[in-house]
Length: 313
Image (cartoon, rainbow, N blue to C red):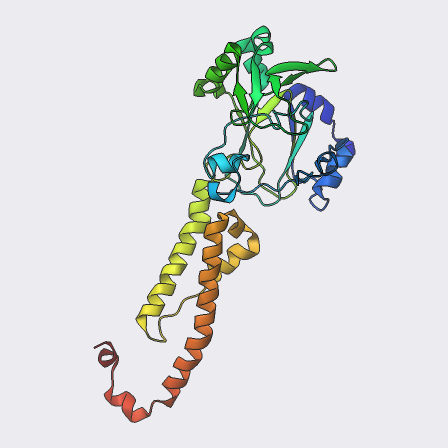
């Protein structure tokens, strides 16, 4: 399918390209190699433990390290940034691919050309930043706008780059102004295989799950939390009812487990929910056979003189 797509023209024109349900049966690494040369981080930085293909999912701050976006923002909206801005030379292209998607979650993309026009090339060339953390492949000092092999490289990251010069602080002021991003583009990766390829020098973006919980909060509430809450409420009612007639099910939990939506819940909360349903299944396996046996063993004459009202008294 890739042979029939003129990606270079789209990338030169728009800075990114969106391909729907692209070879969903093919691994992301194999697909990336069909597009171009892959920067294999596992070979470049073997001691880092960073995989070449990274799986992104919503996480709370307590579940991630401070050197990660989730460790700083958790389930809130991530700020716009260029990926690996603290590297000496960031990768030219990035591939973002959907594994489990949803219809109301978007990745935001914004053209850096508008920042260049707003601030000016001379000022951006003097906007010097310091990487907050030194490491192999990372640069101590970087400029917001530089060049490599006659191509411009724009970089911005409010977490991992610290402004040093007055021009860098001026850029930070512009980037902190919401008015700057009124013309941003929203890209929706909703189905497995949906793939977005963008140039890091021409566009900057939030990572795969930039708005996963923020923009998708209505989906989380309607599809996951409310049904689970209602199902757990019925479980509680059945337990306190103390009779065989009040029944309940775990259909919602089973469905969320099968379609992958359970993975959208933060890990710490997800583990508690799983333990709750495991305890429910174990309790049901003990209680219902015993209750049924008791109902069978009670003599008919006892049933006639003992009513449900007596049991509740």
